[in-house]
Length: 134
Image 1 (cartoon, one colour):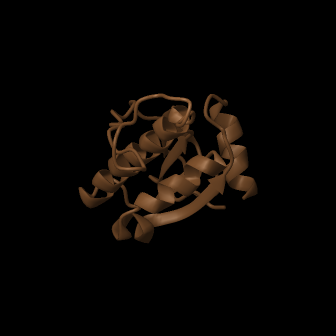
Image 2 (cartoon, helix red, strand yellow):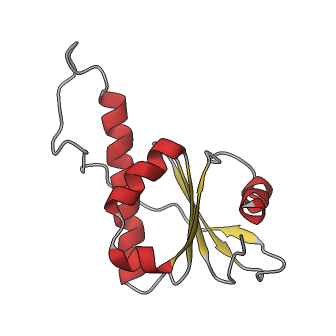
């Protein structure tokens, strides 16, 4: 997959979001880290916060889903504010599925590609290689 110059690359899982900008060009991409985004996690998939109990053992999954919704909100806002013109999303498979549920139509319009792979915590070179191989 080609990475347009200036494209934003979001690398995420259920707990972490890393943002990069391609400061190179399509033929020689170079990702540079951007400051961490402040991700809100209030948006739980089921519509509210639940207390832990034996009947609801999966609070960590709700937390991850809420974080994914928060990531989508950050990306949607940046697209709507004109700060993202080209976007590539690299996310753990479950997180990517949850992100897709929250994409604004404007975000979908600037989406260059998606990679279903967990690369959070990996070196920038690994992210660049995964995108180039996609």
